Length: 344
Image (cartoon, rainbow, N blue to C red):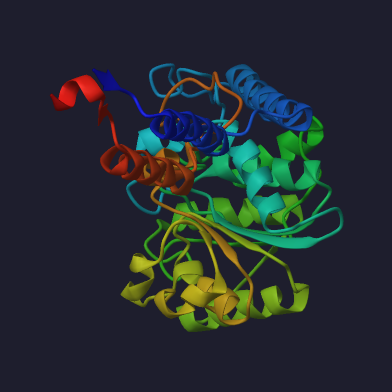
């Protein structure tokens, strides 16, 4: 008769234990109390902005902002720089990004008092709020520079550009940080390609906010100015949000740079903008571009209601190891052996 060898039985038991351990390691981390509070704070800030805009008559149409994020702009205006994707702008508002940012900060070894820099375009106000809220929750010291021009559906409502949105968030107590500098955004971050009336709106908004507007004669000079500010601040991390011209530079090689966390050893792919300067000087970067692909990698639902608190990011390395281990054991172990009665 056929007997299942004891050694094979033991091997399968050990395989099951090993796979269970790898499954645990690959599973997303559960949300902590601090992360829960952060998620709730960001969501409360969004709902506040939505109500504030409703009262002011500047609210987004319900079909464009069905979850009351309060950070969705208009299709086109005088302060619009380029075309943008509405779904990506909504996805960027998900408060799970704040949790993801806080985990990235921890993975970089950051702690209370550490300096970081957040350089953003006005195209993704949802990500600016998420990144800043996470930094403040950890009591980091952020340097904040925002390019005021925005692509479609970003912070491009002419009555409430980013300085107005940020002012209301500070007034309501959701954030504390005031921007250190603004740029006009658009081509070369000098407002090129924007209507004159749009540039006037942004200059007036910067003046009203009491924030210095960085000026330059060329893209190269703007890259140099923003890089020098970065060097003076000496951050341990740069968060680059959107495609601000000076951040990216004008070398198309930057388009091959991975999104999400980027280490300095990838500086050769970073082009010639501020991102490249940071990496060349040993400063890691969180490169927030191509939100749809990045959402899939981070385990954050793309363009869906903000109903889950934690990113469901699965560790691919542990998952792959589990598959390799499973198929190696299955293909190599003896499934049965012949007994005395089978040999006659």
